[in-house]
Image (tube, rainbow, N blue to C red):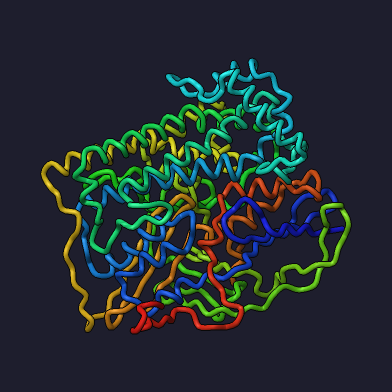
Length: 578
């Protein structure tokens, strides 16, 4: 008899996400639903605003991918107005991208995803000397492990044991330790635990790197329509040197810890079915990102692959990007191109149903209505087909296009782990792809910095002039890849203000509900077929969902339960306050 497991909320993500899976008698997932429970209203808020302010507002979509939406808001307006920023500005934007990707990926793996793989209690039983020796097995050639000396590992055990003795594991609380699908040995768990703690220091370096040219973190302030405003920092050799030092520190961490830990996970989990089960969707889409020179990009593919086929690369036709809201809490039906998109909320709620709780009992609860609307997330489609976006999409599509840097890093990883290329299309592969994308930045990203230094010797420009004709209508867009995948912002400008704005973000591509054609998105589609060891502890589902690095704050954001209008404000002329 089929039974349902409701997981609400999915924790250790950004935003609010609910996942429901339907199991058969063998605890195999036969159906899955992804539902987001908060609404995004940024598209409504920016309407009627000066387009030059759009970036500062869209950057507030999220507290994690702040720079991504900030840049998207700026570039979409530049595209609409026909502005070509100077090369210096483009390269600075790439350096900010690097710092965000570093920060996002290492925080995701260590602080958000690691406890799906690492058993803290097991680490307390490890032999530190054996663990220290084992750490050398996983680093790439030419590097030594970091934070894995025997004395350091003993100190890690001592610190975490003090938590355990108090009966409160702090940040490690409520994880499924001891779960049968956890495969690290005690020594491997101790290595990963040490890196978990060390990464709390390293992620600060990435944030500081963004602040060098971004002015601050997490919400940088130095981008403006037409270019960047950080000219004093660009002309100061000490500031350039500060960024370079931090970039190299992050590259070191990538090779000596992040890369090594994923290789270690590949070895330990290679026979765990829930992380090596092949995805069902098979369609991956990405867009070029990180300009490193006048005509070069670190990831240069603007295209997609279908049915897992790495032998065929297809170029993107932007007119085929659409969103559907048949099963989303919005008015309207059918597919709409983002330039013509609407965001009019229409909440219908959940329906009565049953679920297995944490004790194994059947309890009455609210569940999604699969025949109606059940999520605030829209369903983006390309040519009316669902696509997966994210680091895995970036790596496999660039691989299919023939990006030599990507091919080298991917092939070396597969050779070191002795995994077939098909292993990329799994939960393990998705987690590995995020690290491999970081390694490409670490190995080759310095090219953008060097080209910036060379260009500054002959060109000091940082902003291109422009004007807005209030008698003209404009439309423009940003498309690019950000830490969680392909992001696009689409705008229309009329009478000198924003008439319409639509953001098609990575987590909507992956987490959206079934569309009007009955086709499921990546989360729902890829969970089907997975077997759950224990329905009261659905770690396999959580590990799979975490591997996408969900950012629901990007996908849905801002609501007013009292029905007040969003997007209006009043300036008090007497006291100068809002």
